[in-house]
Length: 189
Image 1 (cartoon, rainbow, N blue to C red):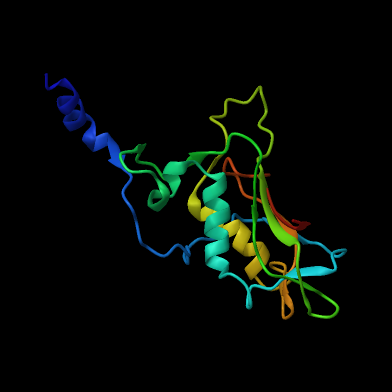
Image 2: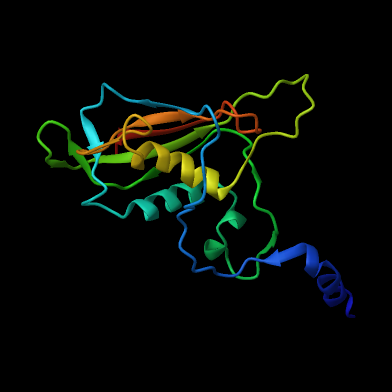
């Protein structure tokens, strides 16, 4: 019988095999939504030392890959996995990922062990009465909003000449992501 082969041929245009992709993920053309607001922690005595730790891009990609559907990161999909070809993914609830980073004491600049960065995203509550399709995000949104916190200089982000601080960004604009909160915390590991 050739029915399975026939179905794959018929469905091939609407489905994409998730094959490894070796492109660098930095999303240089991404912009945050209008009226997005950043809040930096003023109470933490620790900072993320990206310059002496894992590369920022790798940390952000690992954090996003841990929170998004597996097909969003094609280079991490097991062989023979079939994925729908899309760039928008449903954010169906709060997500978080803990990543190993070098953490330093703000006062002394000394590297301190036993700490990590927790990346979290909490979607805005959608009105039950509203006819909404849900909250959707892209890889660029995930990477971009977290990068805004840890890589953009104060006051646009939480990065200073000492390193990256903890903080959050609340998405502005009118997309389904409006009101969603992306946050980075430094936690005991």
